[in-house]
Image (cartoon, rainbow, N blue to C red; front, top):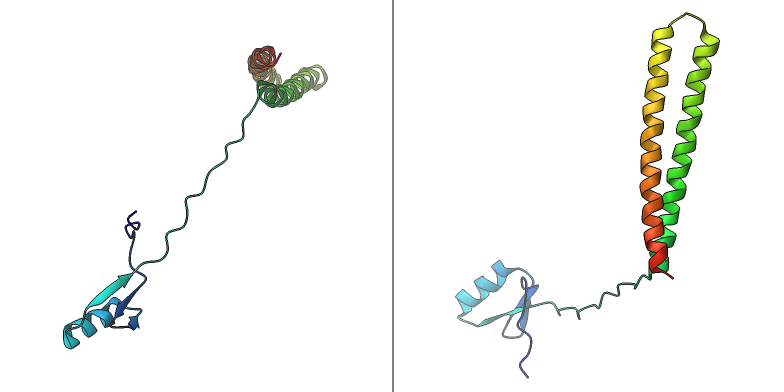
Length: 133
């Protein structure tokens, strides 16, 4: 069995039993003294095995249940904002009614987007929950 080939840059040099930490010193030693200089390499670390945890379908379903819960929280927050926008129009009178109506439209659009997102999360959860059975 052959020794492993050194890799990377040398960490020091050795000339006739004399260690050198800088290449310039080792080169000077080798040229003036007509001596041989050997490069020294750091020991290569042993390869480390990476353990990738195995995730079950149940783990994926639980992960998506959390996403679904966050999405449901978002829907509830958007629904509350929509209700407050409607309330502001009812209580606001005629002052800035156009802006208040724009707020309702914006809140309604946000709520609709949140509901679509929640629908997607429910689908993903059910798909993963079915695989876990």
